[in-house]
Length: 257
Image 1 (cartoon, rainbow, N blue to C red):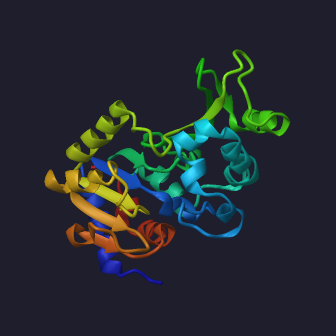
Image 2: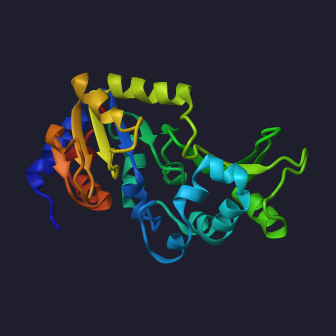
């Protein structure tokens, strides 16, 4: 679907004039790379209950459930997923406008793979595996090989249980990382929210913090969000569709202000 050209041009100009741009992303942006959301019901993903594989209590009680999910679903998804147009445009914008940070609820590492260098991962990352005893880190390839031989996989050094470096349900977000994100939201003069339902707290406070401090708010999300009425620019479209059209505007014809 063609987006209104005048609206895209208006947002491009606002981005060009902004002194501090913060991007806030959720599962919707990665869905375009073939990674289903927790609410997805397609294929193998639906075989596993997120209330079990993503919950810290269930993980500690029965880690084999998570590691079965990891072997059958998460590992293949992470290995096959590639950054999509939206990820690539955001990475490119670092050299085009004053993009200071990408605050993401996603744990797939696709922003970094696309080339973004200013990523703050609110919920951690699935691409790092850590021993719960000695904190030794392993790659997902190492963890996959270990899980194939022994479920649950254990640390080579201390035989401690391995876990993904993510924030499970039932765990608090890292307070320093969360505060950094809130500071970015409070400081920015343009917040671009992409692919987030904005209903998962405390991260969902980020758009409101930005608006309360006078920032322009742009929302790109297929579905309605609680902040739609507060948005200065609103697109109920796929992120890749909107950002692809953004690249055709004058934003790419000038250096940073």
